[in-house]
Length: 190
Image 1 (cartoon, rainbow, N blue to C red):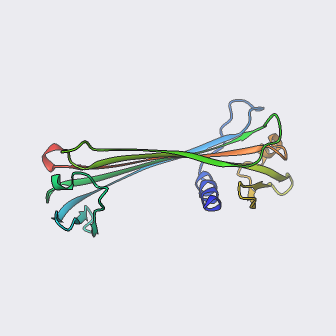
Image 2 (tube, rainbow, N blue to C red):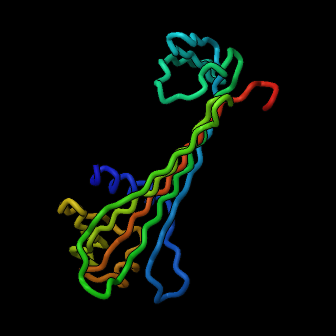
Image 3 (cartoon, rainbow, N blue to C red):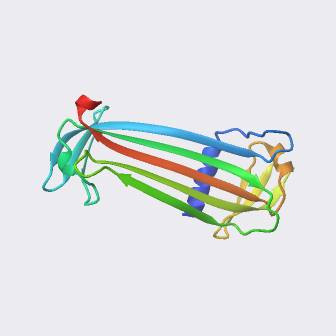
């Protein structure tokens, strides 16, 4: 899983540009995106918890709401379900005072609607992965990172000048912040 997330982070960051406060500052980069989608409730069976939604584009999706969905009895045909996903990925180079091993960690939080309200949930998580710089090839403009699981991957530097600011043994810190909001509202409240 770490390898996939590390590759995802690197791929998403490929679209961003390096930002530095000064010529001698360590390189950092970040990228963010927000996606929002809405769908209308076109059918709901409160006993079986089966729900059918239709998007603005006319696509339908049906599912059975799990027991963790609170207040499903408050949902009615015509209600609008809005999902918002926000993601921010950042990458920074760090010169540790002493050698450090690559690692990963994270934190999650969730909040749900109060009893009797329309269903809603906000989920947030932060994941931090560090990788150790294993090799730098200034001529080729590439560098290799060793992840927390010991996997080594080679990457092409978007800005090869930044490789001159890095050394073998430095850490590259990847941080992925995500927030997902799912809200159900009656059409007249929108």
